[in-house]
Image (cartoon, rainbow, N blue to C red; front, side, top):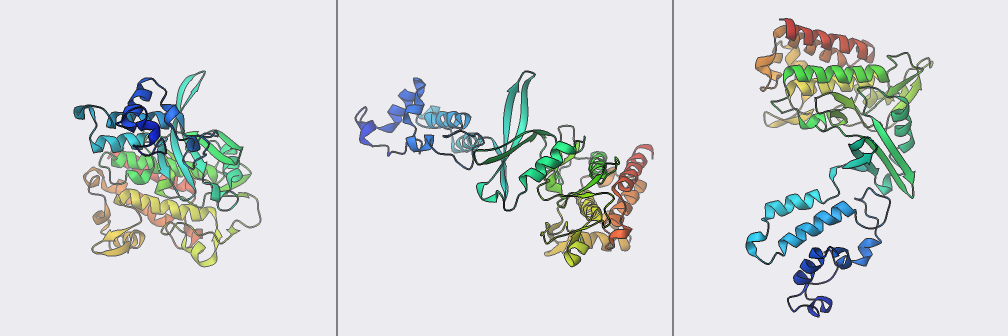
Length: 373
């Protein structure tokens, strides 16, 4: 795979009758393994590389060649088992940590005067440029709207056909990965919810800026978590910016929002408002309470978690929806306050939904009830 030649290619047989393995061991020990690499690879710019130079990423190539070298060790006892090989090959995959519809995301280490810094590098897939991803809009938002609860921008690159954004690396990944985690206590869940509401309040003009940012894609997978469980909003690729004093407080478009998180009024009338973000926030609150994503199999059929939440709330048996891993931790007043604000966020009429600042205040009350009762 690395050389682009068969194991018994005359090039290798000429040196040793046992072929490619012996030659590979020699080159690796002499630290000249690059001599074996297929020249075509050295001229290639692959979708999964984040650098702007041709050829494989050096770190990836080193990890791959080391794994191959171990596999062709002379003694069987020195060769790794399949599980180890898989792990090593995954590590050699250029530190890829996510692959979405529009982009690849890599974990990288940047060295500067202050030491080494871990970052997340988002690289757009080539077919996306100019079609489904507004690269400059995301940069504009990240450059202008800096906040404790918005993912931090480290740098960017837009040249040589590449569109790359470098973010602060949030070590715990996205919220959706932790919904069923027993280590994510009720107190931590409340703090995460408060962080998200604070971030939205800032985007919605809570600091008296002249514009409102309508995110349009608030969901658990777009909430990143710091090592200490602090939450940050990310993914502004389809966001909208509108002046606060604009005569109309909504934007009309035909963008298809992630199913389940979508404001019912958008589905019906095709317009977005900051209250549309509040509905999506309500969905995330229910997911955090239930410990499940919005759509999951429940009692042998496909059930919308929001419909179930509203039904249980109206029947006064919301306790049945609480994630088992946290149920014993929650005091009644905290649960009641939390479910009331989540219910209000999910109101079908956008005028009756609370503002992000009000959501934040109610969530803080739920947190305080948990502490003092």
